[in-house]
Image 1 (cartoon, rainbow, N blue to C red):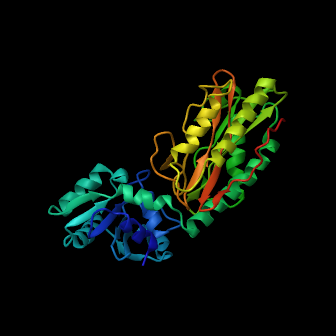
Image 2 (tube, helix red, strand yellow):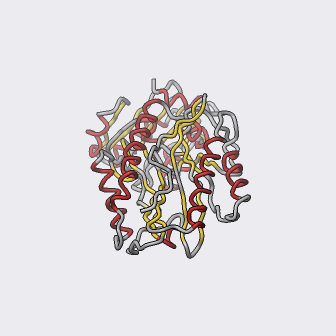
Image 3 (tube, rainbow, N blue to C red):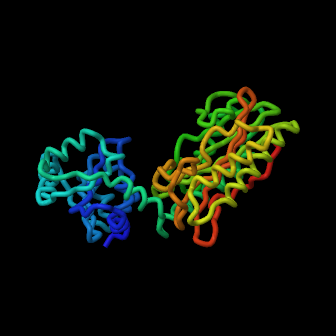
Amino acid sequence: MNKRVRSIFDRLDDELDMVVISNYTDPFIDDTFFYVTGFETGLFEGCVAFLYPDGDCEVLVSRLEETSARKGSVDVTVFSTRDEFESMVSERLKSASKIGINAKALVQEQYRRLERTSPGATFVDCSEAILSARAIKDKDEIDRIRRACSIASDVARSIPSFLHKGVREYEVAAEIEYSMKRAGADGPSFATISSFGKNAAEPHYTAGGDMLAPDMFALFDFGARYKRYVSDITRTFFFGRPSEEDKALYETVREAQQIGFDAIEVGRPLSIPHKEVDAFFDTTPFKGRFIHILGHGIGLSVHEPLRVAPLETRVMEPGMVITIEPGLYLPGKGGVRIEDDVLIKKDGIEVLTSAPRDFIEL
C-alpha cells in the first residue's frame, strides 16, 4: 500500500473509484505525479498515474521513461504509441463511475480527453485533498528537504568570497548555482535572484549586469533541488560602510523574522505569523515597506499553495515545511530580506537552513 495515496483518499469528501494524475508536456507536469510515485529521475511527459482507494498506484509510462520508472516501487505499464496509451487509459476508466482529478494542475485538453474517454463518469476535483496531503511531509520528504537546505546553507556561507568591487550580478548567480551543483544538488530550485543596490528593492528581480560598488546592499535569494525536493533561502549583505539607516533596516528585518519564528505553533492559523510581523513593522520607521506575504510552503515545488498570509485559514500542523521571509524595500535605494525554511513540529520548530543571519559588512 502506498501511504501517500491513502493520505489523499483519507482527505476526500466523496467516495471515488480512482484518482487520475495526468501529465502534459513540460512545463505542465503535475508535481503530484512524483509525490505518489517517488520517482527521482525522468521527465514523464504524457504519462499518467491511477490511484486507488486501497492505496495502490499504477502508472502508464512511455518507453522513453521505462528505465527511470522501473527504479520505483509502483506498478508500471509501458506504452509504445499514443494509440496504445489511449487504449490503456480507456480500459482502466471504463468501469469507473466517479473519478477524481487534480483540477488545479490539469490542462484543459487533458480534461476534455478524459471526458471523451469516459463519457458516463462523474469527474470530481480532488485538488484540495491532494494539497492537504502534500502539505504534511513524511520522513523521506523531510530528509530530502533537509539535504537541499544543507546544500543551500553551505553555499550561503560562501557568498562573501564571491563578492568584490566590479563583480556583476549574473556572475555571482552563476557562482551560487555552480557551487550548489558541486555540492550534490540536482540543480537550483529556481533562477537565482542576485541583486545589488537599488535592484534589491525588487523582490523578484532578475539578475542582470549591474556591478557591485561600495555602500550598497547585495541580496541573494536561491535554493537547491535534491531528489526533486527544494530549499529556499535569502541572505542580504552590505558591501562598504553602512549608514545608521542601513543598519536599522537590516536589524528590523532580523527582529521581524524572530517574531515570525516565535509565532509558529501547532493549531494556530498560518495567518498569525504574518499578522504579528506586519504589526511589528508598523511600529517602526519602515511602516508600509513590507509588501509581500511572510512565507509559503515548500516541497516538490518552491511555491506550494500553503501560504503564511493574512487571509490563510489553514492551521499549522506537524510536518509542514514553510518559509519565513520578512523583507523591507526602499525603492531607489535597496532592500533587505532574510529567508529560512522551517519544519513545524508538535513541540516547536526546526529551522532547516543554517547560514548566519548576522549583519555582515564586506
